[in-house]
Length: 304
Image (cartoon, rainbow, N blue to C red; front, side):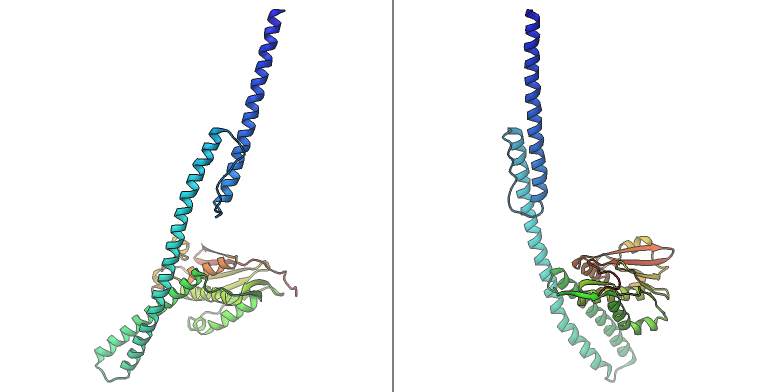
């Protein structure tokens, strides 16, 4: 009887210990979930720190450690954002300041072309004019890119027809397209495909992509608008490679066929697409460069 009583006591004690440990594990798990959920929220940019209901010393210490990390992360983020903004403003100001003297240089070079100069001098003037024009193009693209990145080019969104803007952009490049002997193949749905977007930004995006297609094309260009709002630009570009295509969106990256390029056109297009909630992607298949543009908030085809 005595042994049975001792066994019952041990079992009861064991049950109490198990219940205690189970409760402790439950509360620690809840505290860990609170920390995980709170950490995900705090890294999103809020200024508050982590707080948990648990009084467990280990969990409180973990929360304090995470809070220290959050403070350090926020300080680094603030320094980065401040430095990034200062750099953007500096680039914008420098590129803006360069436009005036470059325009003046171009004007004087044009006047020099009308003067009676030697054959060698005329050749040098022509070289200077070409280099100056290239610098003007680079400066203008750099200025536009800086303005777009700074968000200074905010435009009101409106309901626009993607197909109409595509046609307008293609018409604007008619001279360059025909000069290359390209006859574009255009495919669009019967009904309208519409989205909410800043009209100027969408036009600029299409113009940059068309200009890029003309630049790299081996003599063809296909533009397709699907019913779900995807715009596909495709052209044969055998001088490109899959590695180069993946770098086309990098700032200032150019390939040999586009040596006169600033390397900013596709970067600007990607930035504009992102600002409108869309995306850009590039593929290289069977010698063809294919750029996909996805635009958000589309209306159904044919709706009014």
